[in-house]
Length: 458
Image (cartoon, rainbow, N blue to C red; front, side, top):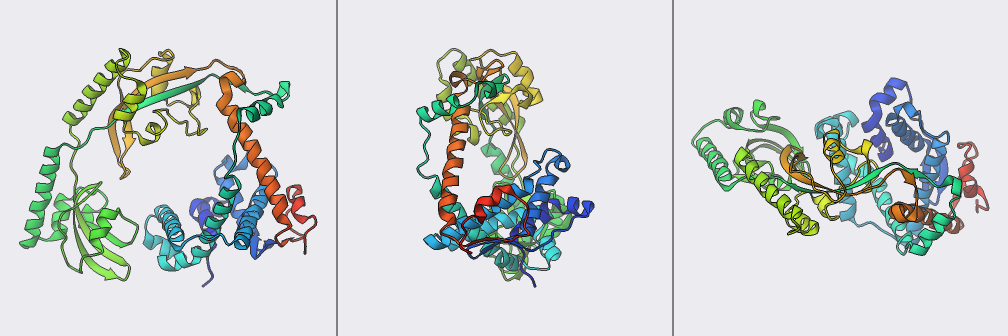
């Protein structure tokens, strides 16, 4: 059976419905050869279709989108070719870890490992074999790319020079922007509730040992909404599909053996393996979840009220409050500052702020703290959780023309991007002469790739 190209599988997973609806067919032929590596037309078309599916039918895609994709693929192949020359390798553990991560994504798109296997007529192990070479090449290419920028630094003088080179009539105009910090707290399950849940599942286990039917007990007691009606059945699972605490026990059980109580982030489980199929298990489980009670939320609210009072009377610094109390790991790692998912920076235009929060922010002055606000987050398990947070309005700018005083981080980022582009251009030009490159004459008509054709040792 023909090996799958990972780029094709990505696009098939993500946009197969859109592609079918439009009647597009991903075709295949060699567009270029770089070292021992080829660029296929199917790779370009797959990435282009993916861009179309996420861009309102491509209304805002540049006319040279395919050329940009083609050049990026040429660069990726050049990284791989140079990695082969420089003996850059990816270890088997690195490749396996990335394979597992990719396959988990594909499984989530299809809904289950069985559906993925059925669709492609291949087992997970066969798919891994198909992907291994592609993944290994991607990893070594990433290593080469990272090495190129190892010593990249942008000094204040570089930033000043970059800004001074912007023509006066091209200096960007920025809307009003805010920087906000947050302290977030969630309740934890109290000891009494954990004890109650554990005693309940231990009682269920005793009843099963004494002869009660596992499936009946799952239907009447399990708190897993996805499996309880099916007698607790999780179907057939492979390694890496479930949380490690669960799998560590499940894969050690014999067929028909009932586990001890297993604790995971979801709660307490009982597991029984119905069938072993090599590296797969067919199993059932019963889940009892300790509950967050209103009392637990009340305790968090009182704690947050106390933190807010200390902040407002200056008996507790923002930095110390974040370090000691905040449970939002992403913002905590950068001093409690919130990150705008749209830009990846800590700056928000008001249009970027959640509708429920903007009403609070509009009433605040720079330096002020909000009242304690209800907050919704997501558990490790993907389930929603409720807590509270305090917002700090750190800065607010008025609409203005960009300046070093007000916009240094943004100008610094732009200066760094320009320097990265220059370094990458220099690296490509240097290494084109060290690698075999051939662009097929009937490839895309792209001015962007002219330098790839010049002085080639064909």
